[in-house]
Amino acid sequence: MRAGLALLRGAGAAALAALAFTVAVPAQAGIFDDDEARRAILDLRKQLEQSNQQAQARQAEQMAAMNDSIGQLKRSLLDLNSQIEMQRADNARLRGQIEELTRSVAELQRKQTDIQQGVDDRIRKIEPQKVTVDDREFTVDPEEKRQYDDALAGFRKGEFDRAAGGFATLMKRFPATGYRDSALFWMGNAQYALRQYKEAIASFRSLVAASPQSPRAPEALLAIANCQAELKDRVGARKTIDELVRTYPKSEAAQAGKERLVSLK
Image (cartoon, rainbow, N blue to C red; front, top):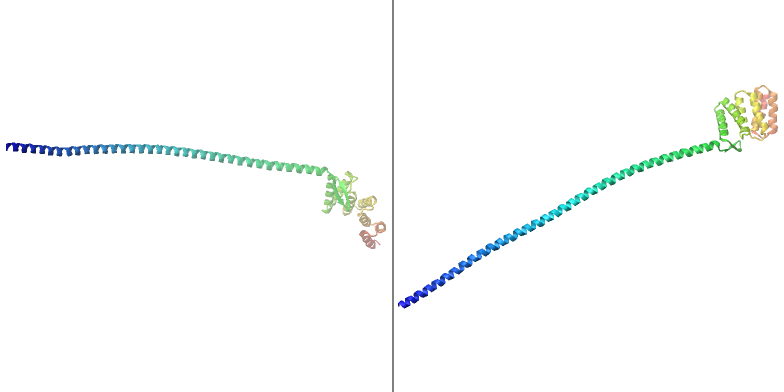
């Protein structure tokens, strides 16, 4: 009995020990699992912090690179603006130079034109010119032509003193002038207008004597007859008209002379 109790007590103690061991083992296992979890969490936190740090470092690098790029872009824009301003300044300077060159060329052309005009004027003053007067073409000196034109202009304006003096000066300065016949004719008419009848007769006679073939010769004879009539020399006037009709019978002056004879009888 005692042996049985002892045996039973021994078996119970063993069972109790076994139970205690069984309970103790899970408790230790639970403690072990919490530590591992903490370490895992700490490791994760550490990895996360490292990852964040790395991300921040990369972001900082990217921002630095971006700032560098932006800085380079700004510098490039500033350089480009500087180049544009320099180009504008160069263009403005070139435009100014072109405008100045254009003005210089225009002034040079104007001076060249003036010089050429001056040369042409001087040439015209000394170069002989061809003229046609009373169906005759001949060459005259520019000054010779100027004097004739001036005297004739005076006659047409009724400035008979100027005309008579101008024609006389022309023939004195240019005794062989091709204008001689015309100058004698218009000088005689100017003298007639001035009532210088004797002088007019001398001028017309010089024309007829020197150039009887001149188309002005018949008119000159008729003018002589008119001068003689003004001088009351009717006989002389009739003789002159007879000469006119006999020498130039088909001329208009001859027909006018015949009509003039009626008043001379």
